[in-house]
Structure formats: C-alpha cells, structure tokens
Image (cartoon, rainbow, N blue to C red):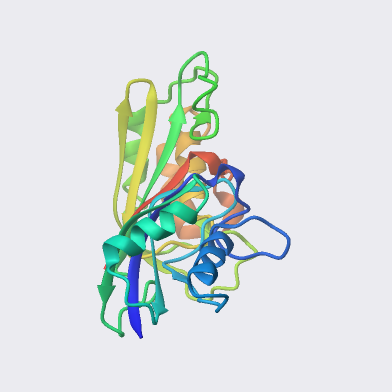
Length: 246
C-alpha cells in the first residue's frame, strides 16, 4: 500500500463545497468517484487539509489517500486529470511516508480574498471576485487595523457561531493587502483557521476601509470574543485556499 500526497486546484463555483454531502456535487465526491473507477469499484477514502464552503475556490488544496496501485506518480496525475471534471485539476502527485497526514501534518495555510473595485464589473470575474460597485476602500486603514489580528489570539469573534470547535486559539502570522490593477487582494497566513474565519476578517476589515468601523474598534472586537461585534461574513466567491504548509 502506498500513500500519495496530491495538490489540487478547483473552481468552487458549481460545487456545494469540498466535503461530501448527500445529493450535492462536491469536490471530494468527484475525486472519490474517479478513484473508485481506477480501483475497479473499490472505495478509496480521500483526506484533505480541511474543507472549503460552497463557491469557495482553491489553488493549493492538499490531500492524501492510500492506494495499492503501482502506477508511477506522473501517470497517476495524468490518469486523474483525464477523468476528473474540468473544474478540478490535479497539480502535483508525490509518494509520501505512511505517517504523513493531509490534515494533522499541517503547519500553516495561506488564503487569498479578492474584491473587484472596478466601476463596471467584468462578467468574466463575477464568480471569482466580490464586486464593490466601484468603491475603493482606504487600504492604509485596513492594514493598520489588521495589526490587531496578527498574532496569537482566541478568535471566537471571527468564527461562525454554529461551529463545534472548542479551542479557538489560533496564530495569524501575516495579513497584508495588495492592489492588482483595480482588484484588492487580502493575503492571510496562519497556523490554522476557524470556520468562516477568513471571510469574517475580510468583512470586518472591509468595514474599516469604507469608514463604517474605526481602526481602533478591531482590537476591541478581538478582545470581546463575541461574533456579534465583528463584521458580516464576506461572500464566498472571493475566497481562495492558496497554499497548505507542512
């Protein structure tokens, strides 16, 4: 039995998220469907670094699975891509030791969130950015407010209320904003993220950028541990899981 580490990229537009859900189209279900075909009907369980929600994208989602097939990794990648739908691509395949775990071996993740600040939104970017109707925020204020988020904190304020996770302490190691033409990108890295954490941070800092929230308020939000004090959860289509670190 071999353990393979696989990095995939997917367009989340037409998926109900990564994780298998009955009656829904998901990334995991598509992967396991193709693997079952390659293994003559045998179910192959795929384990990912974590799940993504409906309409959220990934450029560097990482997963592992065990296989008895002796196919070389290059041919394994080609065989998967030939049979997978076009909105999922396998980027790399490598053989790893049996103690590698796509979820439990993670040391950090990087996400990217994108707003389109053009006055007229391109119809070709509507599924991949969040439209602001031409509003351009004060990025300097957003970057200053972000200082309260960087570091190790209990991030209960930036976590969806319906999560079952008890320990909400995480470390955000980097959070910065970059302009690409008229698109504003928020890049955030940390040792782990709670459910909806990146989208709630994006929504809160956006409020700072457009003057609906003071810079100093973000530190108070973090200290409050109260989800109701933070901003709205930003829409899913602007979010990308960019890289998983091991």
